[in-house]
Image (cartoon, rainbow over all chains, first blue to last red; front, side):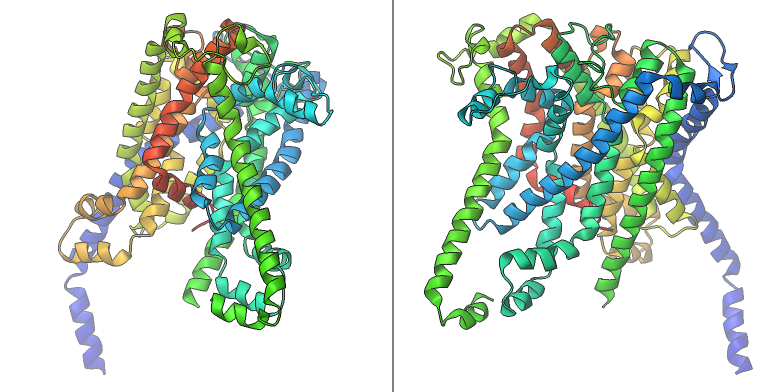
Length: 330
Length: 290
């Protein structure tokens, strides 16, 4: 026994140097492959993230050197009425858009999953709008929803419903943007559709033998099985809502009739600041008023909230991954 | 499957057929309604784009005359070719840079074993979710002190080093390539670089294509980046940026605004027509599939 051990030891000892050299080379390979990414992460994420937090304690206008002012930017938020408006608008999207997006995508995917013919065509048509540039998508809806002239106005007229002013009415501008966002949510539909099609057929067959109708099968089998994907949809939609910028800016500028997107600030949030989302107010403060310190403080707040949402998403993704590995092993 | 399922129902086949047919009609009319709902806005955009100036202002949905010339006229109203060139430069260079930097990183995250790999992957996911506004102030500050604001370089350069979403997506694709292929290459004496170039890249071609498509689309559709860095320099505008001001400058001319809207959508639709399978695969991979 000792002999075997010694022999093994001897065999091991000989290439030990070669092995550590191989390990060092392996480490170098990994480093070489990751070198651009590490540099990029440091330069474009890690540094600016720390700098943002640093700037948030200063008064900085991009020309004069930053002046340390402590927590003043943060305390000012509570006095800034438009900040509170922006928080309200973004929260509106986080709640309304998240629920609407997931329910809508689930509904569409459930219908597509049950189609027996024309699946490819319907799926393609549902996905196509999400390829449109956000600016083009908003302008398309601007055309369809324009009061008194647009097709939607005519359509609602058939039912005797008077169309609201949509993007020109503070009460309807956010629902109008939400409608655009639903129109372009094809990617979420495809993800949910893939999950529905992945539900094991045997489960449906067993339930059908037990006499469960289509509705009950959907409720008791489809829904629980795809719940990790729905959770992904919820968190993903929260992140989308927190970042809502382009659609709000374009809807506001088109509705206000502003000629120049880069000069005038009067269209940002038009009408009556109803489309002033958190990122839009951050952009206005930082890059229109050049109050970089205050913009950085807002960016820090946005980071903390997004980070919490992301942490939740990563946790869900890990769970889903582990489930999949578990079922593959079984 | 159907044979087994049909047998218990044979007692009352008629009722079953009826319900089945009704169900079929209900589901397919819903599907048709959905397809229409998604397609109609683009149909209206198209119909408006070929109307005369006067008709575009009315309630009419169908053009009385087809003004195909509108699509050419918009090129006189704005330097669209210049914007198109800027958009192409941003999208193509960024996509090329992304491929150079992200493929090796994705390979290292998917197929090489090293300590801290999971932690690095989490950082990538975190960067992917970070709103661009969070890091905008210091980055703008840095680019401005380099004198590069007002150009497209602040938008393009980062892709040559790091694009979190592409690394994430490529890793998902490379993970599906069986480890045994990589191991076999190593046994044959391939270095990791050779394994990457000769085995992984050819096998992951559909995934690489999908990732490149998403990168191209994202940069093509980007609005915040170009607004931030080139907003004040109209000769550096991209199509997205130009489109948003076209509506303002020519907002009385719905037909022309919609013609430009369609032209801006066109490349994405053409790409999709050629690579539908890659798109759908890429989309499902961005979901929860580990």
